[in-house]
Length: 328
Image (tube, rainbow, N blue to C red):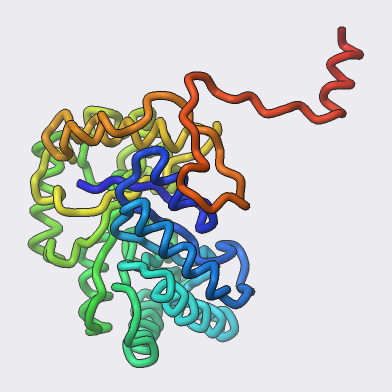
């Protein structure tokens, strides 16, 4: 398995290299806004060069959060489709192999109408952006009006669209929260058997590896640090032990509560995979065992990261220092 993290498009290749990533996921613009600045050709070239130097493969682009390809409101749907097509072009320019998008919400207007809108958007992408990454629909936790929660729904969405180079990205947190038990070898094998029977595992192209704050069937979309949530270390070992997943890129989208959390979560994922034969032990030997200094946005070279034996503590602001003096 090739493990990677969702990181910044600016420093992601360097940070990914420094903490031991073999794959990378990014946003190609502001994930919480519609407007995006034109792509700078020099920055695009620099990103691709850094990815090549860091030997990150594949690069995955995640869609902007605002995109809802099942939206019933005309203006929201128009903006969603236009942004979707624009991001596919941007992702292609960046050399991405996959573009992951949520299936969207029909907002109470009915699954059939929501599926029709999503299928129309996928077919537009096929016609208007022939040079694009493979589009991957991500499974959801099953909140009200959302599409893509079950394997059956994902199959219907892909079959209705009928476009080439479209598949699925399965998120482990979303699977558990939607009611798919994956925490024992038997349960994980049963889940993959069902996915193969209903959807075909040939359509499974990427994993999102996240622990879950919510339990089985909770419908709670809250990611947790690996091994600290309801899936737990044993649950990930059970899942990783199935050889049908070993060829997939596995991207972590775990919380970043502290500066070094990305490295710690990535290390844990690789350690668990190595323990069940899903990754080579050499990978662990190549990964840093201590905190990695944060990279400055201006830095371009991979060598901008330095492994430290202790965590660097951010400098206090003047206000914080003055408060401390008064307290003393």
